[in-house]
Every structure is written in structure tokens, then in C-alpha cells.
Length: 200
Image (cartoon, rainbow, N blue to C red; front, side):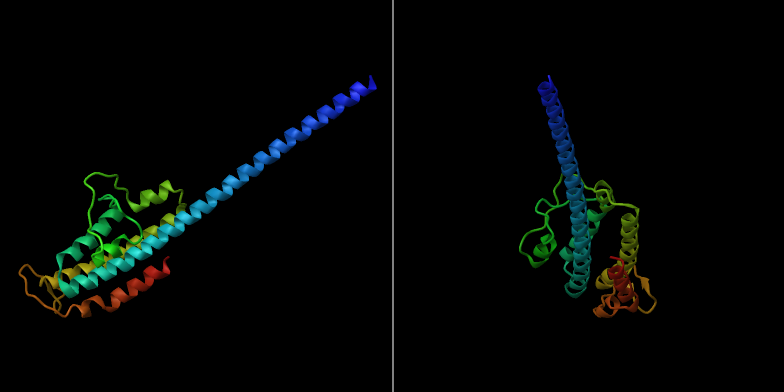
């Protein structure tokens, strides 16, 4: 009788240990999943920041190239980058962080697909679980970028002879001028570029 009771007790203890181990392993897997999700979120955030930084450099490069060459394709690339970021156009099929560098260099041709799912950067960040502080940082970057864009618009107008630097006003009739480097390197734009770098 005692042997049977002892056997039952050992069986109960063994069952308890098995259940405890299963629960412990389950907690380990759950914790591992949380860690992986946190790492994935951080990696996504880093990639997004890197892409934003790269796009800012590419936009600056396109402004300088367009004001030097007056080739319309650089102006088209510039606006497509902004439209994609704003969710007005879908990403190109072959898009990766090197896409615009390859397009600008002529390695590949730029094509926006006729169909797609355009998504603004803010929506991408929300879908990736970005918090309030991260969204505020994005808004700060957007505000500075918008301020820079206003100066870049002047450079574009000047390239087309539609800007009067003396009166700082746009013209309705073209009057070509070719000293645009002075506009691009204006003190205000330099300050905005520094602010943009500090905000990341």
C-alpha cells in the first residue's frame, strides 16, 4: 500500500515538474519572441532613419545637379522622391537604399509603377509600431525638410530664369541667370541642413 502511495506521489511530483518545465520553456519562448520583436523594431527604425538620411543627401545632390545642368530629369527625380515619401506615388519595383544613386548615375532607368500601394512615411511608421516621440521626431524632420524645399524651389525657378535675386521674387517671364550656386549655399539653407542632421 505504501509502495503504491509512494509511486503515486512520485508520479504527481514528476507530472508537476513536467508542467513547471513546460511553463518555464513557454516563458522562455515568449521572452525570446519579445526580444526578437524589439530587435526587429529597432532594426526597422534604424533602416528608416538611414533611408531618410540617404534621401536628404540625394535631394541635395539633385538640386545641385539640376541647377548646374538644367536637365529636367533631375527635377523629376527630386519630386518623385518627395511624392513617394508623402504617399502620392508608389515605390519603384526595384527600390532599395541604392536605387536613387543608381538612377542618378544612369545605371538603371527610373520607372514608377502604374499600380501600387502608395503609403506616406508617417503611415509606415505607425504600422511599424513607432511611438509618440518617434512620430514627433518625424514631424520635426518634415518641418525642416519643408523649409529647405522652399529654398530649393527658388533654385529651380532661378535655373529656369524665373527668379529675381535682387527683389527676391518669382518672375512670370524667363530671364535666365546662371549663378545659382550662391542661392543654394545661402546661410539659411546651411542652417536648415545643420538642424536636420541634429534632429536625427
